[in-house]
Length: 61
Image: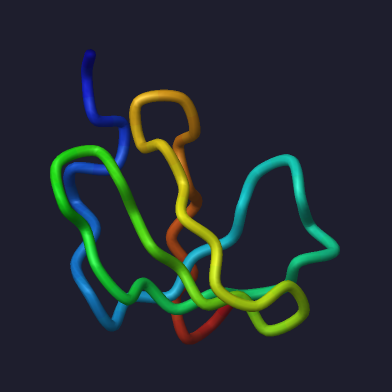
């Protein structure tokens, strides 16, 4: 399976494309296609990077 989030690194900020109510999350780890993100409104979530393409958040967003 292809990792849709190969560009992500710990410390980057992201949003889940179909869970806008989770708020902005900070990437904690990326191991293979498993991405652990700490979202402001949901807490820590492990995401399958082969199924979900997270959206990177930049300072101006």
